[in-house]
Amino acid sequence: MAVRPEETKAALVEETVAQVRERLPAPQAAEVELFVRSYYADAAPEDLGELDLYGAALAHWQLLQQRLPGEMKVHVYTPNLEQHGWQATHTVVEIITDDVPFLVDSVAMALTRRRSAIHLFVHPIIRVRRDPEGRLLELVPWAAEGLAESLIHVEIHRETEQGSVDELTTELHRVLADVQRAVADWPAMRERLKSIVAGIDSSPPPLDPDDLAEAKALLEWLHDDHFTFLGYREYDLDTHDGEDVLSSVAGSGLGILRETERKPVSHSFAQLPPEVRRRAREPDLLNLTKANSRATVHRPAYLDYVGVKRFDDAGQVSGERRFLGLYTHTTYSARPWEIPVLRRKARRVLDRSGFAHGSHDHKALVEILETYPRDELFQIQEDELYDIALGILHLGERRRVRLFVRRDAFGRFLSCLVYLPLERYNTDVRRRIEQILRDAFGGSSTDLSARVSESVLARLHIVVYTEPGTVRDFDVAAIEARVAAATRT
Image (cartoon, rainbow, N blue to C red; front, side, top):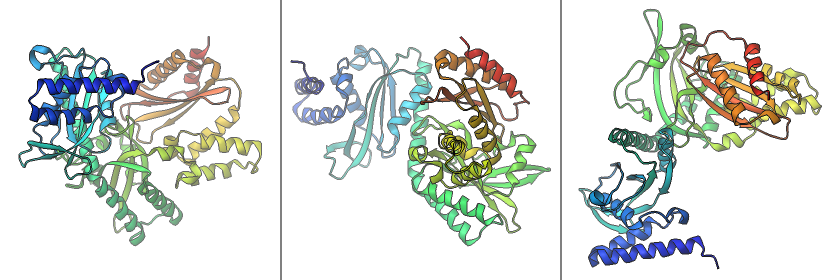
C-alpha cells in the first residue's frame, strides 16, 4: 500500500523531534520541540523530502531569539557545515517580521523579479512573548496573548557572489518596509477617501452634476473593498516661470508614498511634455490610469493610479489627491454595468451604435464590452472605446490579423489589442509580436495577457512601456502588416 504524503511528513517531523531531544538539554529541547512542530505544521509534504529539517528549524530558532517589535530580520546565506552547522544545496532566505497581510506574495514577487528560482517556501506563523529588550521569553498558544510573528524560509537558486546576496538582502528589506507601511496606513488611506467623498457633497466642484455623481459613485465603490490601498499623497498644482509644477504636500504621504526623504517636486510630472502637463488643469474630477512602476506589494502588476483633483474657490484645479494601489479581483469578475464610470461609458457606446436591442450586432457589442480588458475600460476615453469596439465588431469571426492601438494620455505606454487566427497563436508568435511592437514604439518593456475562447480568433493585450514623450507618430496599418507577416507559417 502506498504511503500517504501526510504520513511521510509526520514521520520526518517525528524524526526531527527525536534529534532535538537527543542533541539539546532537556529544558531547551521541550521548547524547541514545540517550535519544530509549529514550524512545519503547514509545510507541503513534498517540500520536506530533501530539506535538513533539523538544521533549517534550528537556524531560524536562533534568529528568533532577539527581535524588537516592528523589526524586520532578513538573513540570506548559503549554509555549510563548518560555518553554520547544517548545509543546503541552495541559498537560504530567513525572514522574521510582524505578521501582516501580503508578506508571502510580496516576498515571492521580489525573488521572481530578480529571477531567483524558488525551490522551497515554508511560512509558519507563531505567537510569542518577549521582554522589553526583544528577548524571546516563550512560545504561547495561538489563542493566548502575545505578538504574532511571521517566519519565512525560502530556498532559491544558489548565489555565489556576496554582492548579489547583499543586493537581495537590501531589496527584501525594502519590500518588507513597503508591506508594513501599506498595511499600517491602510485605515488612514480609506479614511482619506471617505473624507474626499464627503467633501464632494459639502463643497461640490463646478462640474457637470451627472459627471460628478458618477465620479463620486466610483470613489464610494472603490472604498467598498474594491481597491487595495497601497499609497496616498497630496499635491499642489502651481505655476513657476510659466510652467505648471506639481509639488507634494509635506506630511501627506501614506503607505508606500510615506515620505522617507523630502522631494517636494514631482519629477515624473516635470518630465512630461508641456501639452501633457496642461491636462492637469482640465476641469474633470478623476484621473484613472496606471503608474509607471510595478507594485512591490501583493501582486506583480503596474500600480493603479486614482487621482482626484482639488479645486480652489475660483473653480480652478489647484492640486490632486493621489491614491496608488490595485483593483481587487472582484473588479475583474464584475460586469462593466456594475461599476460606476465604466457602466456609463459602456452604455454610451451601445447607444451611439444605434443597434436594435437584442439584435445580433447589439449582442456582439455587449460581449465585446464585457470582455474588454478591464484596466483599459477604466482608462480609455469614450470616443476611443467606440472606435475600437466597432472595429472589433466589424472584424467578426474572420481569420485575419487586426491591431488596435491606444496611446496613454501621459505618453508613458501604448496599449495594443492584437487579434489573430487561433491556429496561428503559440509562444513563438507571441514573442515575435511583442518584439515588433517594442521596436515600433521604442518600448523599454511589455506586459501581456492573452484571451482564448470559443472564437476562431485569439486576443493579445500587449502594453508597451516607453519613456514619457519619446513616442513619435506611427502608422498602425504598417505595424499591423508586420504583425500579420510574423504570424504566417
